[in-house]
Length: 344
Image 1 (cartoon, rainbow, N blue to C red):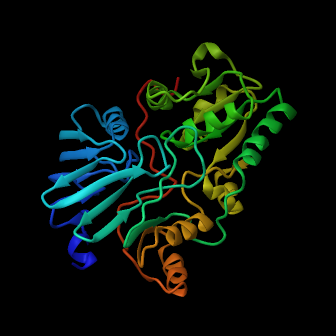
Image 2 (cartoon, helix red, strand yellow):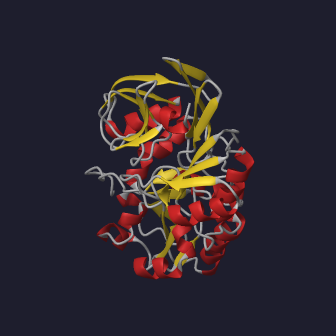
Image 3 (cartoon, rainbow, N blue to C red):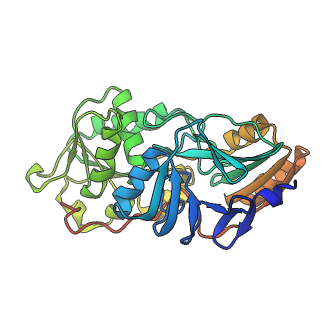
């Protein structure tokens, strides 16, 4: 069997013909396997969805309980047979519930990474290497310029600034699913035990993380009674940094936690005073390391800097190709519309 007999690119997304299922389809389909809850991978309207219990909970929180016709939860390591194809989910280390998916038929195994990272994250299960024949990898940060610094250094920047400017609010932009909660946990690991404040749009997902056993300490939604919050950390969606919502705070210092903050021009464009290079995606070194460690002889590269990573693979003597799939974002995931009362 050729790899393209088991998995191929269709307008809807990656399709497995023998099982008649799609992985992370970008439009409604009859049967979908979902790697994680970010909106460019997990969409509402499918007939049936198979995903981890955490991803299903995230989708229900974002889209409502009736986001799909039927749902089925799968545990990490559990094999699910659909027709004569076996599907196995393993941790991807990206966000709560995120998974890689191994697709197996006969002797052929293809692993779809979804979005992943190798750096440790206290808010989700760590990445688990899955040996395979074909590895389908993301390439969000698939350029040599993207080498993420130690997380302790980036969190240290924030806490040092807080100590140096105690009269100012520190307003940190972070994506509402995954990045915000990871940042909270990293701040706690650094020894900060004061309350951390959050924008109302983050409350539902943050409480969901806590309900799944993730310890984030004292996290409070910003309210009108809190005043200007001098000397406090406030985490909000990136879109809120330029919003009138920020006028309540005491001469805020704006920070933004993202892998894109490695590029200074990105920080300047956003008016970010304190760029924090904190990413939930593998950097260049970890992308290359993972490809080698899977033992795959063939690499398919998707959503990101595809051509650079394909070239690196070919130099290593591996067969490689870009998939040129459309409809997938990057670390700058589009934020869902804010509820009417979320900005309080």
